[in-house]
Image 1 (spheres, rainbow, N blue to C red):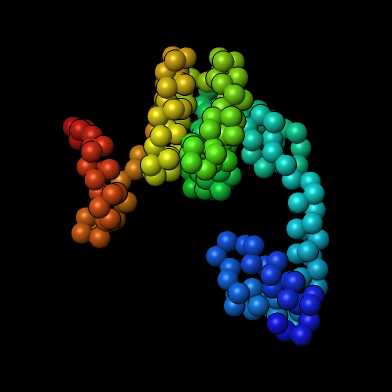
Image 2: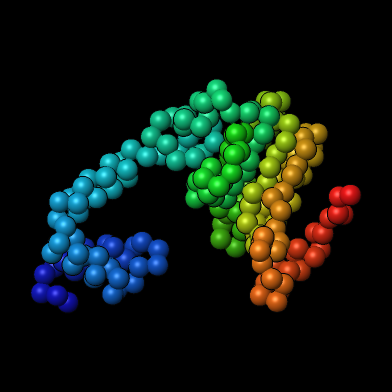
Length: 200
């Protein structure tokens, strides 16, 4: 307790952010109130507007303040390539790190019955509609290499195979520049099991 109910409420509200504990939240609150109120007010306004106006694209389920996002509206994108990701953060990572010019579909999770996440919660009916349109030639499965991610990848690959669409999976394994002795066992086993012939 700080002696200020509003300060305590601010600290408590900041703790909703991932990785922010009580001490970090208190430091953030103190910084905003004691050193940078103007930018704190700007942050509050941006947060309120985003919460009010940002929803999901009706076509790909990415974050968007419009019914259809800019990536889906872009005529420069290749509609024959559809990359399925678990969340918007994965889409952002691919956009920043690669030259991918296809389209996306965002699941907002992965199949996990224990968490109540089935095909309907992940938007599979909408994805089915996308695949049935006939434009997609390759479904790029970019789910994470977790047990649930692999189950989701298998489900997606079956959806593609049933429609004679090529299904591809992002490669997982030893990172470039990595040394085998420092790679964790799961990654090494996955890389070893997914080995490919050396081109001559």
